[in-house]
Length: 282
Image (cartoon, rainbow, N blue to C red; front, side):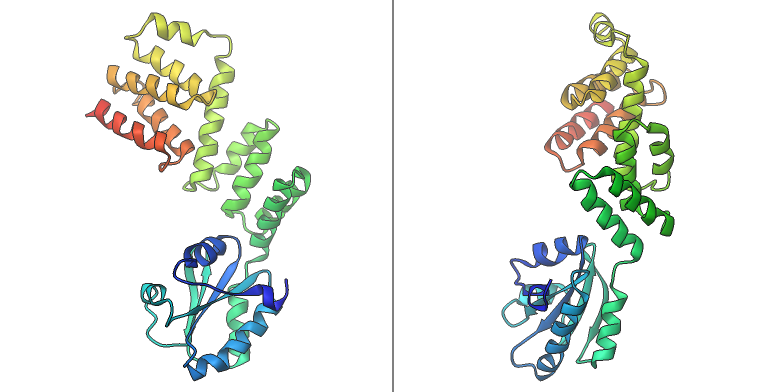
C-alpha cells in the first residue's frame, strides 16, 4: 500500500463506514483539519508521510471540520489540528496541535496492532481462503503470545469444531466467557452433543403424542435447534415454558436465550420471539 492509498478523505456521511467499521480491521488515524489552519498545514505532510511507512497496519483519514461539522461536534473537536486514533470502533489515542515528526511517529507506533493481533488477522485471512492448516498455526501463534485473544480463541475453536474436536474447542472457549461469538459456539457444542445423544430417539413423535408434556416439548425443541430449524425450535421451547416455567431449573427458557445468542439479538426472529418469551413468562 502506497502513501497515497493509505490516506483518504472522509465526510460526515462516510465516517462510520470508513473509520469506525474499518478500524475493526486496522488502526485508523483521523486528522481533523481545516484549510485556513496554519498548524494543520504543518502537521498534514508529516502524518501523510508516516501513513505510507506504517501502512497497511495504520491508515489515515482526513476530515475537513468546516465541511463536516457533525462529526467534529460528535468527537468534541475544540481546536485543530486534532488527531485521534481508532481501533475497534473507539478512540484509543489522541493529541491536539502540530507536534514534531518524532512525537507523531511515536504516536503511530503506539496504535500499531500487537504481534498477536496481527497473527489473528492473518489467520482469519487464511481461514477465509480455505487454508485451515495455515489458519490453525497462526491462531495458535496468536494464543501463545496472548492466551486471552478472543479473535484467535473463536477462530481456532471454529476450526476444531469443523473437524469434530468438540471437547478441545469447548475447553478453549472457556478462555472467552463473555465474548458473544464464543457463547454462540458453546451453545452449538451443546446442541451437537444433544443431537448425538438422542439420535435414535423419536423426539418428534414423543412431543406430538404428549402436547401437554413440557419435557417432551423441550427435548423436541432442542433437537430442532440442533438441526438449525430455529423458528420451529423457538415455538416448541416457548410452549414448554408456558407449560412449566420451572422444568429443569428453567431449561426451556435458557434454551430460548441460547438460540437468541446464536441468531444475534438484533435479528428479526430473535426480536419477534423475545416478545413471545416475555408473554409466556409473565
